[in-house]
Image (cartoon, rainbow, N blue to C red; front, side, top):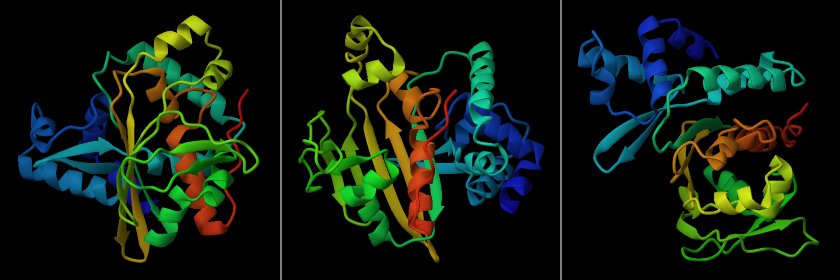
Length: 273
């Protein structure tokens, strides 16, 4: 965490993070616009932020886009905010965001973490039912993980696997996995208190995609999770980013998988009021 606090100590770097918080996925040119800093200085600050894992980089063709990465801040919260206080903290943060935020475009969720494991074992954690059920509230992913194959969901080994429209989009073992994400289901309506009419309306949203990029980084493995295709700041975006009270989203899920791989036990389920 020392790298995180050193990176945050500089006001120019905090300003860059604020700009990414306002609009994620900006290029170096966009981040330089309106700043009284030379392009080279901005590039150096971004390198420090990336080194502290506060910024993740995603290439779109030849364009290098920068995303605010919540993982280090989430790790600080896990360490110093008591789990029974987190719901109140999240509620206040959501209220502040609702009062201050301007409408955003089509968002992309990017989350990067480093795990003390191997690419092979991380791939197993992402694809094998015996792994996923341990950190994903008993949920098993069932697929042969070939491009075009369905990704079925099963709530426990004795249950019937169901097809919710998820399909493997990319599969490069131990390096990259991508698949389409399910739409809203009746169990989501029950969890979030949606009416049948509201559920039908939400199911008209376009289907999103999730991708996992695995890279060796010395003795550890760097995992970058990219979830995109949202039609604005939808309920699905709020759920996967962990902004809904009933959902820890990808931040909690990936942290739980990381803990499982490193210690043999996943995190406890998020506490709710």
